[in-house]
Length: 258
Image (cartoon, rainbow, N blue to C red):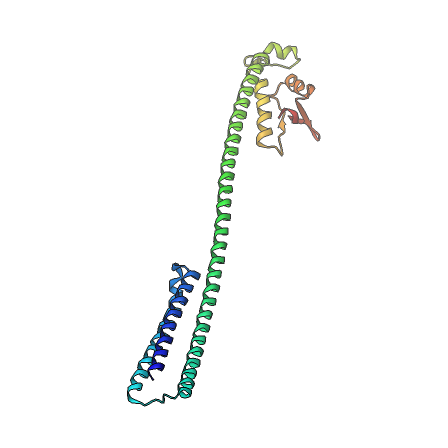
């Protein structure tokens, strides 16, 4: 009987050694950060170890109360049976451990895949953010450039209009009575006392220009008694203004002068 107990104790020692190897193998396979998942495997091994320890204790107690045959054949048969049972139990335990390890490996692979996808999404978002920032900067620069060009264009227009008005005031003033007579205009006594009957060339041109800007669909100016005919003819003759195709008393600026 002592021999059987010693053999069972040796088997217990081998089980402890096997448990340590399994634990080391699990730790090498799964880093410490996965300890939470491995805890289940350790619990199974510990419970199995407790079971074997309790079984050994019971057998030791039974050895003192029961008389076991010391016949070699009986001892060998008993030991072989118990060893087979232990091997079967350990095989079942290894199956559980392997299943747990496979599940953990799949879980780790899934988490690694999710992390990789998140990193790819993060990189794509960073690239898009950088592109949007660059695009916004380019757009701001473009707007500033347009505003600068617009300001310069407005200044050029103001300068041109000012020079044009000065030129028209200097060379095409409000027609005097003498000019009206030379042009064959009938001037009565009241008209001779005032030179405000006709508008200046500057006023005529500005009226045409304002109509072209404010009413592009109907930029025609009606010619009446306040417009001096020689000035109107001058604009028409040099192609600065054109008549309405259906009304000779209406004129507008030519497109090239707008």
